[in-house]
Length: 351
Image (cartoon, rainbow, N blue to C red; front, side, top):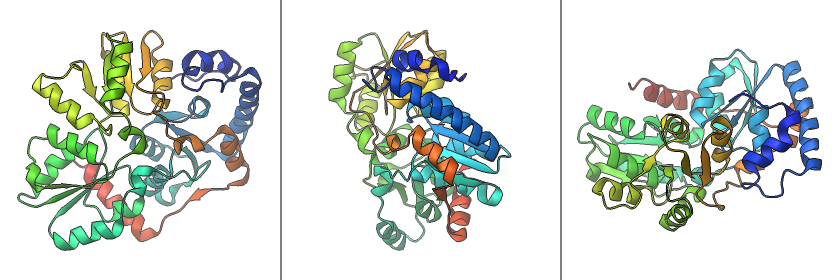
């Protein structure tokens, strides 16, 4: 995504995000953002900081970032760069993942300390009890987990490769039970997409993302009523994802133009699709990125409620403060980082 000049922000933000964040981008506030962005650019250059932002961040954070993407993709991106400092605009576990992969090569800072409802749903004691009950069982954790959870996992997966990782684990460990955590909706969809997994051997942890959980069939029905010709790009974390996928596979769903995709998968699909309209079933920050990258197509948020208040804790003002004062640094205990890295490496080795 080619970055906007700050002088273009007022028109661009209101054109591409005015309906997403009504009343936010006034001329006065946008002028303040532009001034802040210029100071950020100066400090980032001086401190040799690499700024990255998740797809769900406010438009202004996406514009000052060198790279915008999903959590694992951003961590892999910063790992390929020689910068001694990273300012990661996302939620806390994403900063931990970046630090895990980077190790001592770079310091990682964040504008704030945003939590995550998905991570908060994890009870480590409960996971350890499962491991005691199933001593030869396999734990597969979604990349959207904290470092401590990754450290007690056998494999990590993303929303892009969850079914592939689950298949690999099942083939390599025949007859063994699998615990998939924490997102029960992603786990259910992954079982549906897998080729080698016995569903009776999979225990799904009952965690979920509170934003995606709210995107149920009612929201989809309302969105399709407004945009009947649109394709649906739906994240597998969504509350209706497994049910919707089953209906699509059976041919009984009204959403035959539904595609179950990670956020990066949405970008690739929309770019190749001949469709001109899309309903986006994930956090609405993704809609801004899609509109910016493909202005000739139309993208609609599935619901005005699809907003993550944790992601939105990060602001341009806080990013500037972090750069000025080195305020919030991500650190990890070496043993946790080592074990988490091992689980990530096992995922990356799966072809």
